[in-house]
Length: 127
Ligand code: SF4
Ligand code: SF4
Image 1 (cartoon, protein in one colour):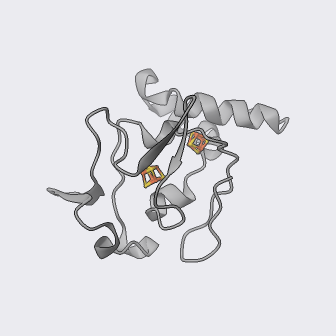
Image 2 (tube, rainbow, N blue to C red):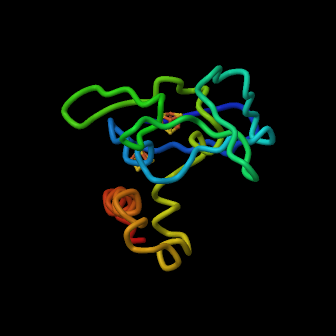
Image 3 (cartoon, rainbow, N blue to C red):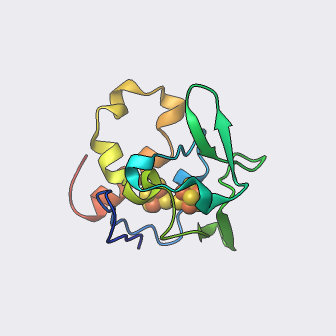
């Protein structure tokens, strides 16, 4: 379970159970001072993207530099609960219910959106 109980972000409370799909996506994890992100916390694991800001470095396979492989397709965040605000507040179930499901290119919708739908079904709630 990803939980975070302090700071300015609304905490996500997602039963990830080893899922790491959103730590491997094509997007960048951008740091936001307004979400209590302190760039000094991440040392050399950040880079400045022009016109965007600081973002976490990615591995060559597109995974986040902080993703820890636990084997059997599972993993966890190596800096939780000090992960950036966008990570701490992200909930794939909200993503699956959002307008992004119709706006995003289909290649970008999955598999994070599919995971969100799966978890909603587990709750007996359809997206
Ligand atoms: S896709 Fe959902 S279940 Fe998987 S790591 Fe992201 S938030 Fe957790
Ligand atoms: S900081 Fe942690 S939660 Fe955020 S993308 Fe990296 S591994 Fe995933």
